[in-house]
Length: 131
Image (tube, rainbow, N blue to C red):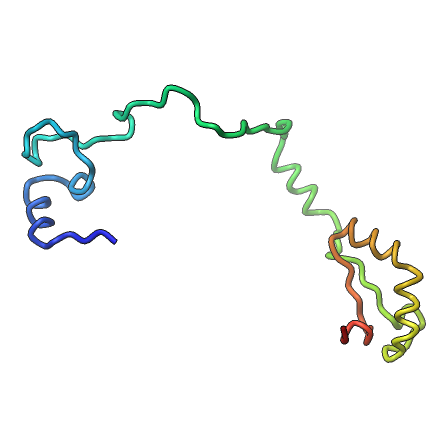
């Protein structure tokens, strides 16, 4: 943390220097006058001889009408994730063996739903209450 003494702040502000220039780095010209020295800006620092090592940004195609595209996406009916309810499957919520059998039999379908939607919600599954 940088600390400034009260007299230093008073001298910097009282010398007619604005508060933004009071703590800016100044060029070293040999003179110690705060009011006569100009602040050192990044544009006055020597530029590097070669470009920095950074990946180039690849932009996609231009969207001709962004407002229209946004409105089209907002108008779509999208569910958060598919929901699997044990009562819809004809299973009781306390029938852990039946629930486990269902999950085993439909494992690939459930996994594909998870890949497609990011999640699958299990409702009324007591199987999910224990590890």
